[in-house]
Image (cartoon, rainbow, N blue to C red; front, side, top):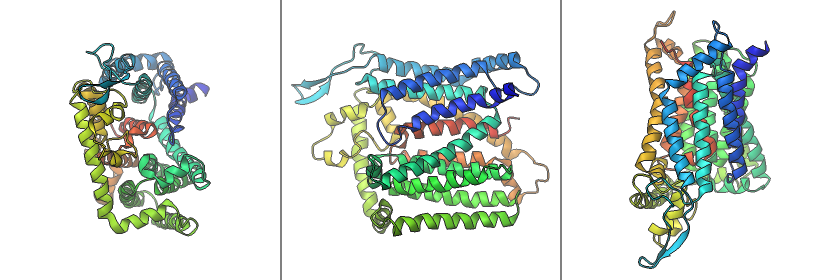
Length: 468
């Protein structure tokens, strides 16, 4: 019995604990001690992947380990991940540029790295943080692709979506109480992607709840309240208006989709109760926000809806300046970029004093994550990262194609088509697309917790689709 529990769930628990470590720094700066702990926990997960992989019905420990090692050696994700880790390691070890005054240009700039033909970074600590974060994501990918079973992945997503709701409640309580930095993040949500984090897990929470409801799990009510309602509260208070609109539309679409999905497997009475309870809970959260906290950020956002054109004009003005600055910085280091966090270091060398007021708030973000990655990691770095992402997306698309073309027993069309693909996949894809769309007008992936969360969801979704 102990052997069964360890092989099925212990590695998933280890990954969940490591992911939570990246969530503990959601509202503030990442400290070096946290990143060192992340590195050690990632190495522990890698060890468990080799020692305690999931054992299938017709296998023993020895056969399971042999199968895991064989599949690891053939996985392109491993080789793309090693290349990316090597690139970031070079940035870390070749870092350490100091500011110096350029007499000819009349501006401050940074010195050249020790080895000019290798990737570099201005600050080694920043490069070390990014290195550890990507190292953890690669380890998670290898573990989830080869050593964690479907049941372990299901529980991992359910618990992570619920725990994010717990984080939302704690941060809301601290923000309303005036505790720093939560109170500031509530009134200046544009300076953080905390609301996007809660919006992402709210959408995933819809899939976690419906999956647990159709399987009649006992904790489906807790998943509903924490994964959906509490994450919605966090989104409402900590997200800027653009993120709130985007994830609000996604939640409405998922609510309609999942209601139709449930109607094919659960009684209509349950579905009606689900819709009514959700409407009541959302209305209650909005009412309490407006009545009990009339000076809160929620009322400010409702006021901004009266002048959406002005809001978008201000957003695009600062985005235009940031994007042009990122391109100017990238032109000076097209292949390797300027290293982790290089944008904020070199921003002052390419921007005029007149435009500085438009980028003073959140000056380390380009408001376009793809462009920021190009600026900081160059063509070589973004190419390796794109290859890593392709190794995750291609299997998902291939399996989704198989699932959509599969004829289920009793499938007569209509709502039965919804049963062909797991709600985890639909909500996971929707949440990922929302974060990707937001990354073109904001910088959500600069938040380590959200970046790791997207990786986890993308890595688990293929398991809920047929491979043959």
